[in-house]
Image (cartoon, helix red, strand yellow):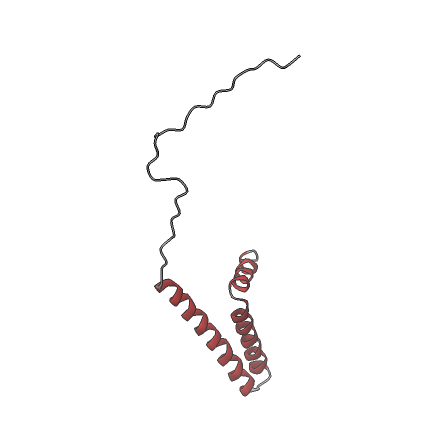
Length: 97
């Protein structure tokens, strides 16, 4: 559990840092408002974190519905003159005197 939570948080902040900051800010505001009996701060925090989470889920859903086809680049012609590459041979020359 101790090793999983920091990895999850780091990956969430790397993928979408603005949304993650808004969710964290909303949760902290809701926590402070709930413990301090400030219902307006509690409602504001829940609203901010809920809107941010909804936006994040909406973005995930949008990315799943539009699959892009991979672009295939061919660096060699489809049919070459010889099906195999020529064999390389090393010729041994005598060094000059």
